[in-house]
Amino acid sequence: MRVLFLGNNWMAWKILERLRDHGDEVVGLVIHPPSRRSYGEQLVAAAALDASRIFEAEGLEERSVLRSIRELDPEIGLSVLFGYILRPEFLKLLPAGCVNVHPAFLPFNRGAYPNVWSIVEGTPAGVTLHYLAESIDTGDIIAQQPVPIEPVDTGESLYRRLERTAVELFDETWARLRAGQAPRIPQNPAAGCSHRARDVGHIDEIELDRAYRARELIDLLRARTFPPHPGAYFRHDGRKVYLRLQLLWEDQLAESESDGSVHRD
Image (cartoon, rainbow, N blue to C red; front, side, top):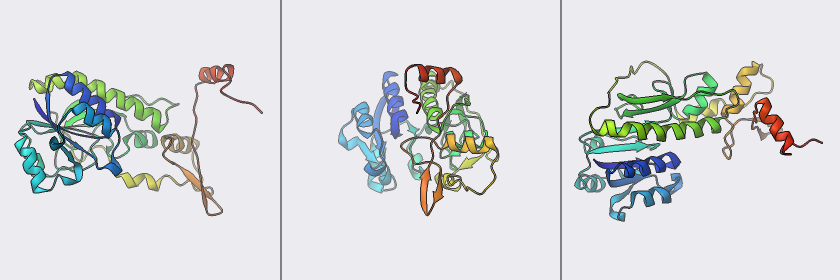
């Protein structure tokens, strides 16, 4: 298929590589602007396109950009961690629609930071391939894979597993989708939950004089442990003190002590 690829970050890079392995023709690439770009060089190298076929996300509403994309004659769009809303005028350029890869088990955790909210709110974690619709992450589901949350998971460790599972699910599903053999399962827009990027700001501050249940506080701290992101904090004399949580199974602790990575006074 003639694919227009829109993506950012490691997961997008790896899925773009898999897409090329499947033999599809990537006719254009849309990437984030430099200030929001991650793994941009790798994405450009994997796409192997002339500069005229590479577009910045903030230009997708410009008529000249839409005209250039139309001239590429894409059949389908593939979006991976693309942080911009795609307008109807753009989506009309894609006869077979646009498929999105979202690191959440839809309809749970539409929107931002699904790894955080699965830990904090106890909702299922996983990855989903779905068609884009007018509302964020509400389109028909193509395929899903749950990802278990371990007691020792942090926001980072869960996210890394979500990334790897998403690449695997894409690899397993794309050929069926391309052949028209993949299902389209409608979502109930009223089901599940959604979050905006700014919502984590409401949970990041630990109030020292508030009563927390132990599970609630541990889940909050581990969900927001994702270096180098700052995460959760409390205030002392007007300054923020940031917290990161390390969690180890008992056999991991024994291994750490034996190899000297845990130090005693």
